[in-house]
Structure formats: structure tokens, C-alpha cells
Amino acid sequence: MSDTERPSRARYWVVVFVSMLALILYVDRVCISKAQKIIQSEFGLSDAQFGWVFSAFTFAYAVFEIPAGWMGDRFGPRKVLMRIVLWWSLFTAATGWTVGFVSLLVTRFLFGAGEAGCFPNTAKTYSIWLPADERNRAQSFLWISARWGGALTPFLVYQVLQVMSWRWAFALFGMLGAVWALLFYRWFRDNPRDHPGVNAAERRLLAPNLHLAEHHGDVPWKRFAAARTTWFLWIQYFCFSWVWYFYISWLPRFVDDRFKDQLSPALTSLLTGLPLFLGGLGSFVCGFLSKGAARAAGSVARARRLLAGGGFLLGAVALMLSLRSPHAATVLALLGVSCFLADFVIPVSWATCIDVGGRFSGTYSGAMNMMGNLGGAAATAVTGHLLDYTNRNWNVVFYLAAGVFALGALCWLFIDPVTSMDDRASEPGGLK
Image (tube, rainbow, N blue to C red; front, side, top):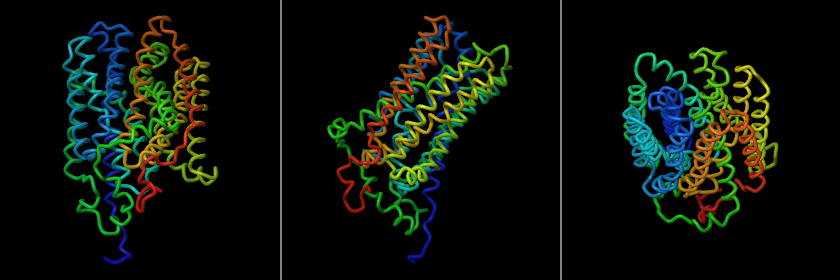
């Protein structure tokens, strides 16, 4: 092969597959929030009970993040992602088979256990298949797909419910992941060298990542736990997810309570997707700003702290401003601005996990996402109880959320987002 041969573009198909997966994941995750009123009425559930239904998913998702991330490091993401997607697709469909509170709680717990490990394994995939300077942008494509999947879902569910029952709707959504899993397993390889679509030039481009494709089971937990960065990275993601889960769980109920006289059901379905739509743009914009921000700030580390910490603080301000308007469109626009700014945290946090975790990026990012989703599990349950206790005083929920965002911003003062804890980072061909 000539040295002037251009690299093939098989790695870009990895970005396409991962972005489609993120979209499907969020459709399956968010659809229950739009069907909440129907299910709650049919089963006779209180707000507090449905808060526990939301929390059951999130708690299971959190608990199984580290094992599923470790499995990707140990066995490779191809088999693990196949298992993850088929499992969660089954329990998406099974949500439509439930008959009451207990069966719904158990099914959503198992659904959460199935989704666990998806993003740690996509992080592992990106660490192997993409050069370091392409990962931030790839993360932005992933998260805009995820957010826009969530933004589309309320309107999609509304339309689907016009032609079938909520039970059949969950079966339909479950089919999406099954199709993706079969196509992905047929095309993907854990190591780019084994893929027939990767030419010699692309293999050379990805050669520095080869050690990241090694399967291993030994994780340096003591090294991770002794690092200040690990703990503050976990806390800030707990704070991010505390607020973010509001958008995929309680937001449709908030809009119904506050603005049901201002909006038609169809318009409500569209507008409740606005915050996630703008959040996706935030992740996308952050990915494209990262290089310029690093040049302007003088270092990648300083740029990441400014992007994530600034996103948290400005997101908190937008949350507080949303309480000052009686108009649905203005409130949802401000919530969208908050989501846009806060989503700067996402690509920064996951790029940090890839750089800091190295060969252990699946496990390390799984640990961060576990802590984040524990925040989401706590928030969804606490919100339900707050609403019952305060007779649906949503202001209390928003004040608490703004305070949590401010705590997240503070954490970024203590995070080193670039120094690897992989002991092979300094080896030839290792991390830089």
C-alpha cells in the first residue's frame, strides 16, 4: 500500500451506529413519561408511587453500570452491547404487559438493569475506534441524538396512542432496539484490525489505540478511589442527573399541572420536547467549541472546567428565571435554555472519563454514570414525595434543582480532566 493512501472511513460508521443507539435508548426511556397519566389512571397510582416507578428504573440503571462497563473492558463491547440492547428491548415491550404497581415497578427495574452499561460501552468503543482528536466531536453527535430522541418521544407517543393502546405502543418501541442489535452485531468488530472495511491507512491512524482494545479484568480501584478527580467527577454527575431526570420523568406532569388551560394535547407534546431538543444542541455546540475553548483558555483542562462549570451555573440561573413567567412558551423556552447550557457537562464529562480511564474507560465511565443515575433515582422519588407533601408546589422542586446545579459547578474547581490514571498511558502507543 502507498504511504499516500487515504484512510478508509469505517470509523465514521461506528459514530452512526452509536448515535442511532442513543436515539433509540432515549425513545424507549422517555416514552413512559408521556404515557404516565394513562397508566397512573388505569392502575390508580399516586404521584409518590409513580415517583418510585421512575426511581426503580434509575436505581437499577445505576447499580448495574459498573458491572456492565467492566464487562465491556473484559469481553469487548460487541457482545456486551448486543446483550444490553436485546435485554432492554424485551423489557420495554414487557412494560405493556404489566397489570399494576408491583409488576410495573419490577418491569421498570429490569428495564433499567438492561440499559445499564450502554454508554460506558460506547465510550469504550470510541476509545478504540476513534483518534483522540475526534472523540469530543463524536460524543457531541451521540448526545445530540440522545437528547433529540428524548425530545421527539412525547410527540411520537402522542401520535402512536392515537392508533393503538399504550400497551401495544411499548411493544412497538421495543422492536427498534432489537433491529439495531442484529445489524450492529453483524457489522461491528471489537478491534478495527479485524474489520474488512478498514484499510491499511486507517489501521495506522488507529494504531495508538490498539492497547485500549485489550480485554482485561483487573481494575485499579485503589488508584481511582485515591484520586480527588474521581470523587468530584462522581458528585458533579450526580448533580447533573438530579436535574436532568426531571426532563424525562416529571416535565409532562409539570406542564399539565401549570398550563393545561393554555395548551392543546398535541402542542403540549411538542413543547415538552423543547428542553431536550435544546439540550441536544448544547451537547453538540460544546463538542464543536472544545478545540477553540482550549486554545483560548490555554489548556484543555482549563477549557473543560470553564465549559462544564459555566454550563452548570448559567443553567441554574435559567431555572430560576423560568419561575417568573406565567406563560407556557416562555417557561419551556427558559427550561430549554437551562438544558442547553447544562448539557455542556455531558461531552466534557465523558471525554474526561475516556482520557482519565484509558484502558479502563468502560469501567471508569460506568462508575461515573452509576453515581449520576443514583442522583436521578433519588431525584425522581424525592420529587414525587415533595409534590404530595407540598400539594404540588413546583417552585420547591425548581429551587432545589438550581441549588444542586450550583453544587455541580463548584465540583469542577477540583477536577483534573486530562491526567490519565492508566499506568500504561506513558508507554509508546499509549495515551498522550
